[in-house]
Amino acid sequence: MDGSLVVYDKEKEDAQFNPEEEAVNGNISGSSGEAIDATNGTTHPNGIRINKSVHSKNQKTNPVAAWKLSNHRINAFSFSPDNRHLAVVSEDGTLRIIDYLKEELLDVFYSYYGGLTCACWSPDGKYVLTGGQDDLISIWSVVESALVARCQGHQSWVSAVAFDPWRCDDRNYRFGSVGEDGRLCLWDFSVGMLHRPKAQSVRHRGSISSRYTALQRAETATTSNSRLRSDSNLDAEDEEVVIQHPVEPRARIPMLPPVLNKSIDTHPVCWLDFTEDAIITSCKSGHIRTWLRPGSELAAQTEGASAPAAAS
Image 1: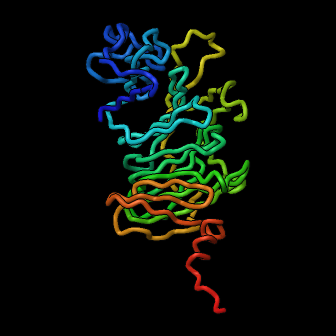
Image 2: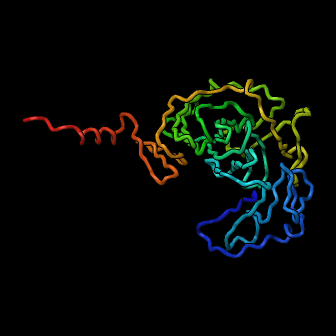
Image 3: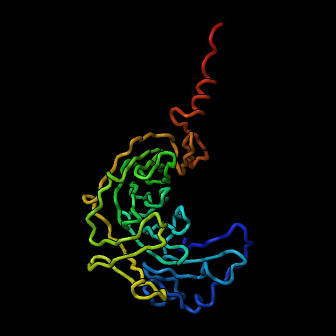
C-alpha cells in the first residue's frame, strides 16, 4: 500500500528483512544521481529507492530485493517475456518501465486520468497493455517509448488485460479485457493500424529482437519532458536517458473499438486468461467460467455429447 515492491524467490526460505546499510544511511541514489532521503519515505518520481538490491551479497533468504517506487499503492506488475523488464502500475496513474537487472527506471507514463489497475506484456515484448479507472485500455510501445492507441469499450474500471498468444504473430495481436461492468471485450490491432503519435520527444531504441541488450537513447531538446541521468558508472556516452512522458490528448491518439463486447456476469469480473481452446474468466463472487472458442475440438466434443442419438 506504500509503493514498495518486494521480490521473492520461491526456492528460498523467508527471513526477517532488514534494509541494507546503504539504505539505512540514505545513500541510495535515484536515476538523477542524487541521494534519496531514506528516512522520510519520499523519492523522486524518476527514482527507485533500493532497500535491498537484486545484486546484494545477502541472497540466501527472502526477500531477494526490495524497492520503494513511490508513496502510492502499486496495483499490478508484470515481467516482460525475457524476464529483463518490469511494468508496474500504481494508484497515482503511472506506468513505470524498469530494467529489473540494472534496477533502473527507463520510462514513466501517465494514464488519461485516475489510477492504473492492471498491466501485461505482449508475447514478443514489444507492447505493454494497461487498464485503468478511466475505463480505457492503453497500448504502449516499449520500442518507441510512446502511447500508440487507446481502447474504449468498458463502462467501468478495467480489472484485467491479457494477450491471446494463439491469435498473435509478428504483426497482428489479439487481447482481451474484463471490467467492473461485468463485460468481456476482445480487441485486435496490427502494426499498420497504429500510427505513431506526434510526440514532443522521441527516444530511439535498439532492435527489439535483441531483448533490449543494446538499448540506446537519443536525448532531444525539449522543455515538456524532464530528463534525469542515471547514477551508473558508465561513460557519459553510455548513460541512459530517463523520460517522464506527458499525458497525450485524446485527439492525438487513435481510439480502437472492440471486436467483441459482451456482458458475461452480473458481478464485477476480475481476471481472464487464454488457453488454446477457451477463454477463462473469474468474478468477485467467486465463479470461474470457461468460454469455448468457436470451432475448438473441446467445443465440438461438447456439442457432439449433447446431440440427440440418431434413430435406428
